[in-house]
Amino acid sequence: MTRAMIELEGVEKAFGANAVLRGVNLSVGRGESMVIIGGSGTGKSVLIKCILGLVKPDAGTIRVDGADATKGDRDAFLARFGMLFQGGALFDSMTVWQNVAFRLLRGAQKRPKDEAREIAIEKLRRVGLKSAVADLYPAELSGGMQKRVGLARAIAADPEIIFFDEPTTGLDPIMSGVINELIREIVGEMGATAMTITHDMSSVRAIADHVAMLHDGVIQWTGPVEEMDASGDPYLEQFIQGRAEGPIEAVR
Image (tube, rainbow, N blue to C red):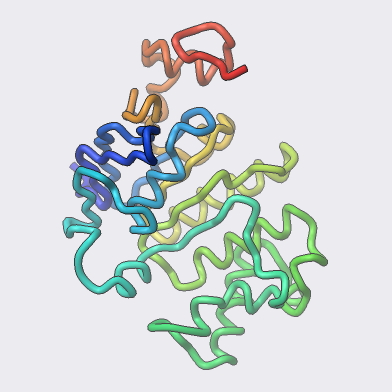
């Protein structure tokens, strides 16, 4: 059995009277690509923020590589992660290469400027962008190119764990397919553990090893992606088929 890289047991988080996470149990194996699905507002982003320590859970335990995620050297902990943010989240005032090398230009992973630029250009090439792009600014790029720059930044420091937050939002179907393919290839090459949150079922099928559905604050179903369509779970079936009728109430 693959050793767990990320383990959550009984994780709870409420904001006032709004109980977002109600006892999440989830295990993500080392080198595995886990995709978390669920409707908008179900707590997918909150779950990732809890793992990263950006939000403190009210209860439960979170372990990364067997160690309590809330203890130890915070900088060393965060250095193990890469993140592709929804919408790219690039810094407008920085050039493309400076965005990619952001972590390499500061903090514990700081490299000389020339070395950081060289690494950034190498990562840009890995996501299909030419070196000429390096000195442009994000505003000069298309949405698909910005997403690739975000992906290059996520892998720039060769992290062990990569989080992808809605990686294909705002992209056309062709570019979505390109990004999904890049994610799958790069995660495999790096041997990284990946956790993706999305409601794009084409992304799920393209990049997932395992799928977990978060609904009403708990993991409603989890299993290998190839078992998803025959799960027999009414919540999962309604979600992946996009039906209005079913146990999940549509917010009107």
